[in-house]
Length: 231
Image (cartoon, rainbow, N blue to C red; front, top):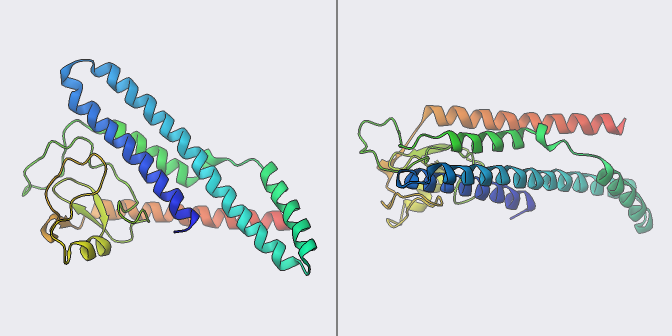
């Protein structure tokens, strides 16, 4: 697993934690002290966003360092020359400020956290053939598969709990194993996943297209920025 996969997994874990705490808040709000718990959840969510900002900054720096190292390698004929060029490029990158808050990945994460906090206390899957379960906030959208931590290519929704998986991966898991449950942290769904639980969702597919378009735009912007700096 490369560095970016670790980073994407960390971001997913941050989002899942924020969602889990929101579920707890919704579950105990009727027992008293709801305002205090909600304030704690909001503070925690704010902390998760700050942590995500630092992680995305590291991811951006890592990408820049890899590109600078490759450029130094291409431009060098000796080890000494490589070390000199690489150090110059690295120091220049470290001095360059990174506007993480304008990055699409950061904006997407922040919106996901805000969406988590805005979720109603009751689950609404929109499926008439499913008995509603008390799973507050489970329909929060995450573009990452909970098993692989990679971006979902073909999303399917578990109509029992509302969580999203990559279609090909989840089907490969349950094909020969009837004991697979939803892996999302805090999910109260204890039923084993079967093919009948997995449904296509036009709204989720549309959201995934938006995420992919945002990522593609970031890549294009970064390439354009690199080209301008190299001129």
